[in-house]
Image (cartoon, rainbow, N blue to C red; front, side, top):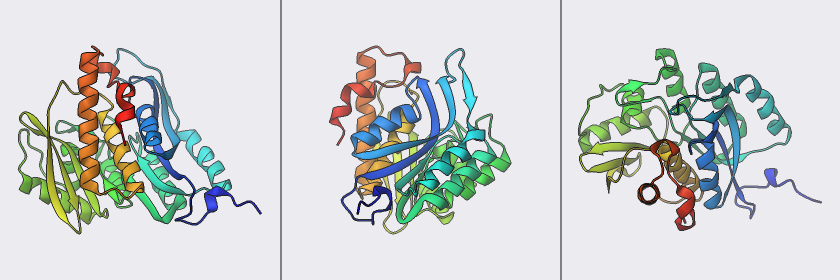
Length: 285
């Protein structure tokens, strides 16, 4: 009798699967477009749940945008009929209160006891929320974070979620520890505060409720490019599924993104086009 792979017991030899709730952007290397090949390279099947379809990201002069919210529940319902569950579930940009609620239900409906849930709370940057976010959506995002095992905000998002005043400039390790502790009080066991500006370095503060916090620094190269956060969280999601220690995964992700930026500068790739990760994807292990 053939067994449906989706219903095989945890620990069987089946391939790992991750669901990724995020938008699909055709050009510009961000969201699912970068996360899917990275997760696949790390030997996890990546199954997208689209939140929106974009021709290209919004940093270009114009773009086509199709909000997929009205289709998400019908799409997800077909997966329920298949009896799917996932080893990992990741969320990226969610553009409305309704999408956040759909993501929360998805986590509840498609998780097993051993499923790893990563929430990347894409809410803002440089001390300000994005235009689509208001206080109500910030409260809803805190609720979604409570469902996560690992949360990966930048400093701005960490401040919003942890209810800490934002300040520009260098952040001390003690401040980041306080932020991470507050984030984990919402529910997650682990947090990584990403892209912390530290002069000529970028920091990533790793926190594990059991092991405490550690600041990892990487020498800054080039300029900020879109999609690097999506690559970072994709690596952490796949590694978490494979039970790679958090600090090792963060170091791997930071180095890979640095190498991607170096290669993109060498190839004179425009900033809006993100990073040419395809050129060095074979280095990722």
